Length: 405
Image (cartoon, rainbow, N blue to C red):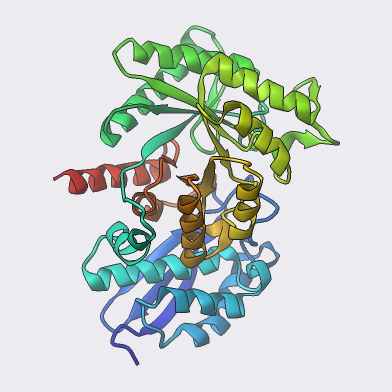
């Protein structure tokens, strides 16, 4: 038995940022232990693994007992073997234990191995996995959620998120700029527009305005910061599957055909200089994504989230179709670090940029900050405000300091 052999795996039910229940997993060996807390989501792609069996956290925790029998005795440094055991017992799309439980075990194992090596998690993942793929580690830029709509807000805006990210600054300066723009939007909609604004489940502003009105507002507030010599980019997460009804994309009282939606997205890109366009088409419309990428991909990052769900087979299909030039990465969409690394490697090999992302119902765990660095990701999506969001941002500021010391 290896000297880093896993001795125990324990899961417990904890609260997510919206007051629902998720899971935290601790993996232990003789010398020490490590814990990972896994986020939930409000808006999910239909091709993701199941978060919990039958949506039941307690059942996922209970069913973990069978998985433990396969994992105990495996070395903590044997990430692929641990993840294979999770697949062996976890069921198809992790319908037996749930993707959140599987992700908890997988990430906690990596954290434990990093601790045994005396390394930061990002250093361990980079040295042991992504470096050999030719990937360069690096600090991503923060892609902040400024104004919310769609399934996250139940507001007039069909687009799920209007995003911002500064260019050509340090990460620490970037989060300061994003926070400044966020505050400016709040001050403006309350003080100037006299709209009783609130925030959604991710801390983004909910304005009551329609899609293009919100984009214009974000553009104006970003422009105010640009006067100080900082270039602030806008982005949009459409989450278009959420408002794709009966073959049309429904923006309020407007119903657009797929072809009209492609033209609409292109117009928004031209009007507002969208640097990032995420999920602008239905999650199975690889061809529609390809049309948008063909039109705007030279100047914008077209990102697949629901399109790919961090799934290697779906990314392979997207590459063959030239569907996007970016892929969103969420470990619990696929269930293990090993599966995620396979997607990262495929993306890098084919020139597809990666964006590591939080989920809408988060925990204070900061492991995605480490993964974004190890993966050499272009951006990290983790909101702007809220304790569970700033936990990742503050951790990245610390990592940036380590990497530039």
